[in-house]
Image (tube, rainbow, N blue to C red):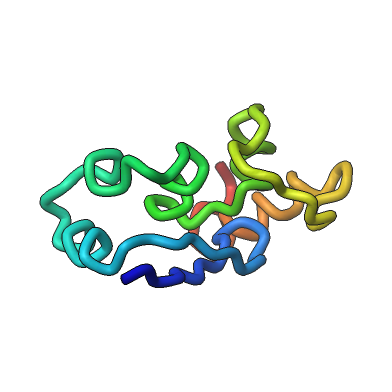
Amino acid sequence: MMIELTITCPFCGKMHSVLVREADYNRFVTGEYLVQDVFPYLNATEREALITGMCPACQSSIFGEEPDEDWDEEDLEDGDLEDVLQAAMARAGWAGF
């Protein structure tokens, strides 16, 4: 059975979803398996979302690569990424880095 995992990006706060097999998810949350071993059918962007919670747009902005999936949200306009990252870092207690 497939389940939809809804994730809130820790950087921009936008919600996004990843579809996974329930049995695979149950294996993954034990912490005993690597994400690429449990979810070989997901692309790198989807697997990163499961690990870090980052949405495709933030992954693209941070890692400097295009997301593996279509992402047509206009969430991050030019110049917004620095503000988003600073706010996320402040919420996480990393202000000043």
